[in-house]
Amino acid sequence: MKCRVAELNIEILSRYRYLEDICGKYAADFSSADLVLSASREDLEYEKRVAVDRKITQGKLESVAVCRKLSLELPRFDSFMLHAATFELDGRGIAFFAKSGTGKSTHMLLWKELFGEKLQIINGDKPIVRLKDGVPFAFGTPWCGKEGLSQNRSVVLSDLCFIKRSNENSTRRLEKSEALKLLLEQVAIPVGSENILKLLDLLDRTISHCNLWEISCNTDFAAAKQSSSIILR
Image 1 (tube, rainbow, N blue to C red):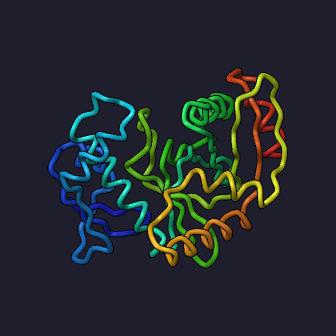
Image 2 (cartoon, rainbow, N blue to C red; image 1 turned 60 degrees about the horizontal axis):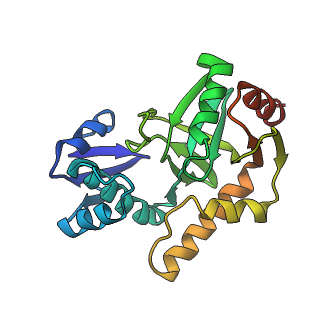
Image 3 (cartoon, one colour; image 1 turned 135 degrees about the vertical axis):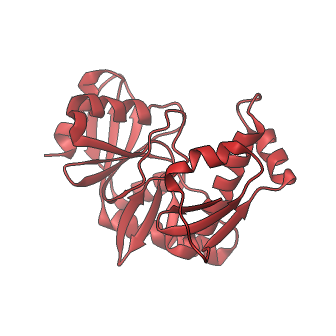
């Protein structure tokens, strides 16, 4: 199976239909691959051991394994994969980050309710960020969360928003050092000191390009009104 993701030609040697299904909108034809990815039986066994869902299918295990392998290769291409919900609004690329279960997708969907068709979701869970001439672009990928929210397109990232659950709604700017620490929690760390240093440089350049925010919020519609009024003004 051949697909083009984040402007990379990727060939996936898959065993199960699930990967073909989710990669359908990214299908491409090319003669030379930038990456060839596959999941061994040992990879599938590892993913099953660490999976939260004990009933996960072999096809989904293969998808998770291939996604993990891709994320570890990306720094070679001035790219990295984020655990984030990313969308475009009025020409701005906005990423929401949060610990699993905290509500990044919920808050994004509240913004979607607020802004309607003006807000276009790029990826609901695992976008790829690729730096081109120093500018970070967020790309949709086939790995987009249980809601399946993704588009095969990109947007320039302008705002990184770190969400934490709170009874009171507030939004504040973050210092660069605060954001880097939080961002490191949302990326896969590659093997080897050279690759780690490369990733840190990519993260630093991305942060330097973006507005940095902390959103403390509940799950009410008022939370989206409050955060958007600060971030978009």
